[in-house]
Length: 288
Length: 266
Image (cartoon, rainbow over all chains, first blue to last red; front, side, top):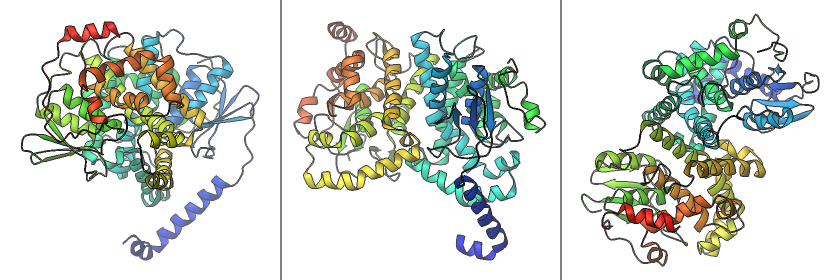
């Protein structure tokens, strides 16, 4: 049926095929990398969006972390994927590090930073549980489920994704992500079951935040970067009709307030960025 | 299947452990903790989701060990977790998810089944031809699943670091308590036991996860032995191959003082 559809709609299909070709050339062609001074992190990510500094929760997490730790950085938004086939990745003093988690570990080591230095061993352990639950489970059950499967059209409309990429997403990326989900395990459940999994996770996180300003207490720590990365996309990047967005709005107001709190503290330039009026991302001198 | 009795469909018993599937071991341990009579079917049939274990109870068929437990808690009004405060329940949720969606891949899949496949097959007395098939078909498939999951894109050293950090975190949460959330066992203990028992009883002794549990995170090793002694008094009989097709009738209710005595001895 897909082949017949493609033949009947050859104009759109040709445009989609051309877009895939252009994307492939961009990804595979070695580009002249942006150069930054020593001890300045070059963060490789996607272009800015109109609803958040990044459509990727992992980019948002990593960039927020850089701001929290006051690490000078610049952004390369050319969408070049790193060695592990992932975005974000970083370059620091000519060394590439893929994956947001290992990027943070590398940054901590290089700059001798430890945002968790005041935490007890118990709190560090709880941080770990929260981080891994959010990234390895909640992310799939909320963001991926809502954005790609349950409310794809509404989400793309909300995020103002160009028509050509909407087609790419539906014709190609959706299938790839479906395969990844199956491999992960969560893709074997029904949509209702996946939503249930996500809801249970978010409710647990709401309990663990409680009425504290940040997850581990009065000051933000490493885990807040992760939590904000994903919760931020659920709040700003999903339409009102999306299940996880609705759940946050109706039942878990402390998580929504938390997102706004993190945004105000670490992204005072959020509105400038999403309205594309601010093109300078050199953060180190902004004294955040 | 007998009416009114839970039938657990799981892989056959093999090796020095009642199940080398952490999910089947978790599910059976939970049934025993909750004192729910059950019988086991080892015919290897997978569920509609392509997963095993799964359960049947009269007309109800439930796939996925976590959904099975949620179903059983409702159906049998299981009160194991009722005394927990909301915060403890939330911690339990996060431990559960981290163990099954992250630690499992770094330890059981990468360390045991991929890195030390030969010893694992030997421990489970798997015939030579099956070992060859597993190496040719199952191991590449597992690597693909790990890539899809995301964790498979990291180096060996990075995967080990991930698993180590996870195990360190739960060791810290457990501390000197007999069970993860206090003096009495709750559902999350069955979940963690299912995984950890496989890392201490059914794995090469050269595996980093085995060494970590035996040498550094001793409280986790002790926890495994504690759970094994309380909930699997028939462990040795089962691994010797004695059949287990009869309804498991729960033993006399567990005396909490006896548990504390045992913990103090350990």
